[in-house]
Image 1: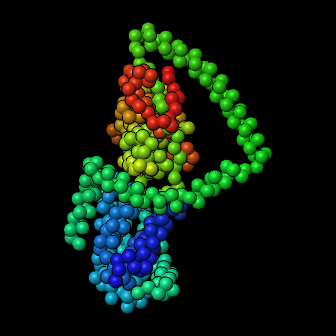
Image 2 (image 1 turned 30 degrees about the horizontal axis):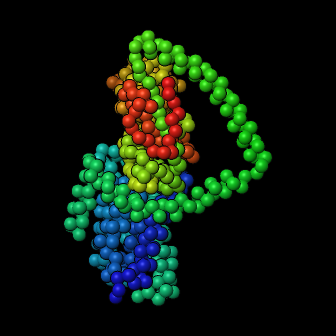
Length: 162
Length: 282
């Protein structure tokens, strides 16, 4: 299996697209609804390609996301590495779960991303306001999961990736 | 896994306390620059088409409006010249040779969103254009913020409304010094340590005091909107609204200025990037 196979390239491109979607400017009212695109894509790949995408990829993508989002270097890296770790660990089990169950697991993961950001901001002494809007992104991300899974799986089949 | 977690925690600590990771951030943002350009491209394109495909009658209307404004500004400048002359005379009486000058470079914002917890903007000029960390950023209406992270092609500026930012100001009416803190709310600054007996009221203009030796002195920062005096507390609660357009501005000015030094710009041994313009010498 060559390192730069078509699959690897496709995984790479999907992550880049996720980062771009995270950067796209939204009107202020829509910003709380912005889903965690990178976590979504990472969840998919570490579930379906656990031998290619794992902790290291999660951590590297997280680091890029930290630069893009202007957060402390390591904040997203840490939590995305953890998400990748648990998804890879239970990949086979997760793959056989009903999509609804996967959605709820994803919901908890995104809630943990938010929680970590709260902790980090609390520790550096700039507490965030965590009203209801702060958590709504988790719900949006969860609702996107079935569609993302269908789209990515379709593309995978069309391109005949293994 | 544990190792990566440890590295992340250490990196966060270092990034928060020290500047060692600036280089890493800059390198990574160079890698991300194509993506940022790609995201910005449709917005840049719409700006471009707006400026090239506008109707002639709109252009004529805009032109006449600009001419009127230019006339008004010119009238104001006449007074300014006289005032500057008077100032110079008074300075010679006081035997102070201090001269003020500022140099500016124009930068445009890129259409990139940061984390909602960060009040930051991305500008299309970077360390390649001679910018430096901590450089003041202003727009047509007042002080916007300062540069925090530089990469060769882009730079991000923290706004005065970021909860991590504070700027020393003085009340223009009576010269009372204080500090304006960001709140994270785009339209609100908090004015710290105002005693209940202090002379401050809604409508007061706050200008930068220059005590930080980073921001140029005398530029508008905010207008006081609310003063709540509460005798049971040590300090009054004072809120102010930034005068600058902040996130909504289309153009920003990056500032080089003399700070507190008494140098003449012509004899200054600093070398400036080519695209800058000297705009003031008062």
